[in-house]
Amino acid sequence: MTNSEPDSPGRTAVEVERLTVRLDGTLIVDGVDLDVAEGEWVTVIGPNGAGKSTALRAIGGLLPFGGTVRWHGRAVADMHRRERARAVATVLQSPVVPPGVRVFDYVLLGRTPYIPPLGRESAADLEAADEALAALDLVPFAGRRLDTLSGGERQRVFLARALAQGAGILLLDEPTSALDIGHQQEVLELVDRLRSSRGLTVLATMHDLSTAGEYADRMVLLSGGRVVAAGTPSEVLTEENLAEHYRVKVRIIPGDHGPLVVAVRT
Image (cartoon, rainbow, N blue to C red):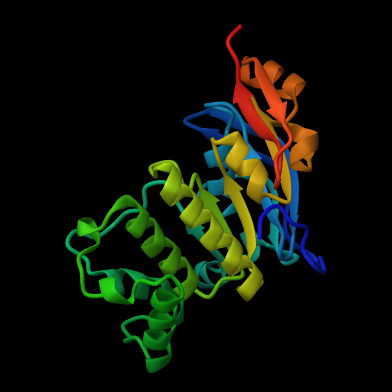
């Protein structure tokens, strides 16, 4: 299932108002507004340096920010760390991986928000990790070291940890940036199936515009840290928008699941 509207859009899962982020005194994100309905997939695009990843990390509560971010109507600033981790799972471009960690143990780290301080994982935690591994066809890899897997396999493990976390909102920062085209499609199809089967809400950043347009219900285009376009993929991925903000000449070709963006020589 690609680029389809949620069957029954519910309340707003993610609401961002006037989001501002400064890094080392430099303004990176400047007054961004966006929202994501429950069960929806929204993808943020933009040229290098537009502030996509910074905005996503701030929305996930991983960076200090100005403005307001709400998850399911609750301000992130009012939530404790464990509450945040139970509500939102973030998969970064380059997650920190403990040296020599086994796949099962890494996925089990997703249960950290449910384990009491100085406590041990419960049977329910072990079961959640097993279910996440099974959902992503990773059971045969459970005992292997994570650093021995291929890029596509590792990406599935990162998603498995996010699933084990039990959060209803999934934030994905460039989930296919290190993958070949076959593994890109494999990972994105998997995310879309999980969105349908588990009712997940997805907010992602992506570089590949055609691929982003095939999977997103809506898109947000950032440039210079600001929202310059938002709407359906067909509304955002226009020759005019991309020429102005990416400084590239493209041809837009209608596709089966969304517009296809082809760069052309000037």
